[in-house]
Image 1 (tube, rainbow, N blue to C red):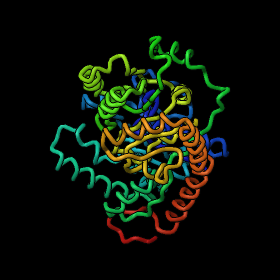
Image 2: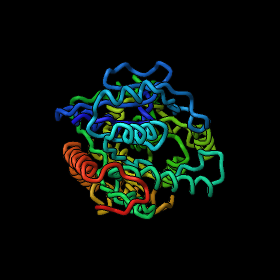
Image 3: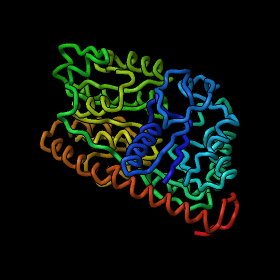
Amino acid sequence: MRIALFTDTYTPEINGVVTSVNTYFKELERRGHEVTIFAPRYGGVESNDPRVVRCPSIPFPFKMMKERRLPVLRLREILGFGRRRFDIIHSQVPGTLGTFALLVSALWRVPHVHTYHTNYMEYVHYVPFSKHLSRRAVLWIARHYCGRCSHVISPSEGMREELERYSLGRPITVIPTGVEFSKPSESPSWSDLCKRYGIRVSPSAESRTRLVSVGRLGREKNHPFLIRVLKRLTEQGVDAQLYLIGQGPDQPILDRAIEQHGMNDRVTLTGYMSRPDVLSFVRECDLFVFASTTETQGLALLESMSVGTPVVAIGATGVDDLIADGVGGIRTPNDVEAFSDQVRSVLGDPHRLKELAGGALARAREWSVDTQASRLIAVYRSGIEEFRRHGLPRYGQPRRF
């Protein structure tokens, strides 16, 4: 198949959508499919890859999302798309390039599937409008965008249930982002990673238990919760160091929380790391801790489990799919005491920690990229067949599935 992937966020950005796009990009190409990515330019800092069509872009208008770009559509890209004769379009974000995907799907008669990666209802605080208005806008966009796609993909069962409440009128299939596996022998050492990213580890921190979390430093990731957890653990005699991997607009808020709770010497902000180095870093840690309640899949948890690092996380959409039965990780309520008690219990029981690590690796293999890519290709073929039989969907049409 000739596949067009449309995404409003791509490298050099680092986030779950970019990881998902690149994971399937590599796997689909490995299976012999021809894949082209349509993505924004980032002021010349992006790498040059002939398989990636970069569209002109401007900085995003909201300062809380300053790392994002707003693509600008041109006739050149629209006409160029038609000459390529794609079999299927797969959009990742219902933004500017998502609109481009809808447009060329209609103009050139190409079936279109969409992955609803993000629960946008939890991100309306980034937009300078009332929450009520923003939520109504999210619902309207979801219905009218997804309602014009042949198929909708949800990363988790919890997100599928949310989308069902939106009455999209389209078939929804749960396909999480598959995870790749790397061998420990291929990973750099802890000291090499710290040197590479300028991470200073004091002599006292060297012997501490390593807790780690990965995610954009934005309020939806709930990082101050982890600072309060660390403070309680310290008060209970747990000698731990917390490493937070990522960057984002709420770093000043996080810095204040660290200062307020007196955790300056026990919290390390590493900044961005390359994805292979993130996995290597997490492998060297004892426990992955996660406080976000807005995930559609919890890809960071899955990647942690894929390197054998068990998880303690707040039970929420995405998280529940991965560790609902306690294999490879533990769910807790959204409560500092309950969360810290579970962390302390696991760290105080080496046998249980080892058992959870083995379970994490086994559970992650159920989400292998090979398995999920096969399901994705089946959705592509279904979308193509649906398009051949019924043509371009329109929002509000009766269901045919």
